[in-house]
Length: 113
Length: 112
Image (cartoon, rainbow over all chains, first blue to last red; front, top):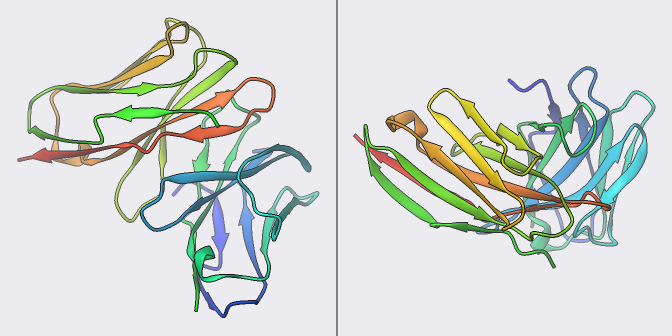
């Protein structure tokens, strides 16, 4: 158990809908990262927050947005969902920024039908 | 687009043998390199974070080296055990924007 929690574990929704994925980092960790793993694809970095501020942005679609709240939990919002958005979404946390190892949550499996 | 390559893509190794694989990354704007171990149906687990040229890190039977000038890192596993079977991922972090770019991984299977 990494200490990072993600909810929900599974989510099934229809095209065009909007969903919110939630992540609670390990106690004391200030950075939160979001990743997407699609079928037959590697891990794609989406976005990083550090102490409430957006720190780095990867290949995140405009339909997706994220934020980190004062209590350091983070939410990833996915809107106007398409079939291709079906994937495993991981959240990870670390003490600070790039020089610290990341601890991954169990992931949220999103299925868009 | 940053190119982070791992080789080989997959590897079968007899139990007890030692093995190694490579992560290649851009030699400019280096900030850090991470290694992760990812077992099927689980989440990636951190192995090492490497930041300085010449770094060597070790955790049990697994060790890693870093050459930032030529842009590569090696991961070594000594005396492979069945529980070492996993995909090993490296991730390059770019100085300045701190974006992470993962390689596609080396899938290691240990044959008992």
